[in-house]
Length: 447
Image (cartoon, rainbow, N blue to C red):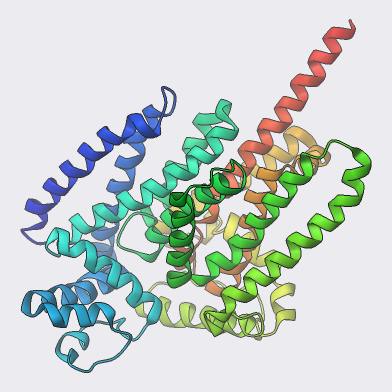
């Protein structure tokens, strides 16, 4: 914390809230407007708290690597010489002419981390490199994407708006780890906007230029920060579109013949999309993904975990860098992301928060199975939005569970799946309840 944090940040907060109050009538109705300011506020609180936790609990970490030991030096370069600042903003690991600044940036040679540092720098120019003020702007961006995501599901299922708001805005880990100066903040916001623009273009047929720009920009942000999120998200997104169109076919005969063709097309397009994304980064190409998972898991457990001095590592079994070992460990990987750490695995206060949320998700899943029965559970799992949310959650749970090996890191990495998994359960409950009410109504009509 610096003196300017107490001067610049209140001004930035005032501007953000003024814009929020002006924008609210245009992006909400009488029902959703009550969630707008509280949802923004918890994001801002999360952003400030992330900085405090990293400063006073961890004594350093990624958020300071992106700002204090990252964007701050590009901002200083701009102050000294605009041409040097621009050179650093366009730099791609090259030290020529900017060594005095670049040598102080921890992630200068890390392509994806330095991309985020460039984003932080653009906001630092507005906030005079004030950490907390820049964190507030990060939170505001993430909020816009989460609000866009909320609007998608609210337009489809308005009767469960309270539960949708809880799942998307008010899960502690999501508004905490998804709000500060971190990669997760940008990717969460971009994921919301990607879902919104995809829905507007392909479901609502709202083919305006702005939606195309949002789709491309949000996908580009995720691609340049966390490729594996896009790899996990695209198959679910594509399948959502095709299953939704299958559901619109009225003729049983036509549906019987068309369904295999459309599902085959969805799988083919999904495969090509994953291949195309993988070509942008060889580590995530299908041929290399098993080795990447093995190396990432080892580095996080014995690198980051060891440096931070925690003892929150976990192991799923022998991950030997082959696809076979990944498939074998898939159930454990999905379980660890969704339902662990268990209460008896807690080693620190932040793990307790994650454990309680995991317990909630486990309890919610078991309750749904008990309340509506296994047959109904899987029957309504094939509804387009339920399938989309749960499929993405399972793919992503597998991806982060298999490659993390540290509960502290996992708590942060898994936040993209949490809103989608809970929303999937909420929609599943909606269909189950609707089906039950319809059967009761039919029974009453026959009496």
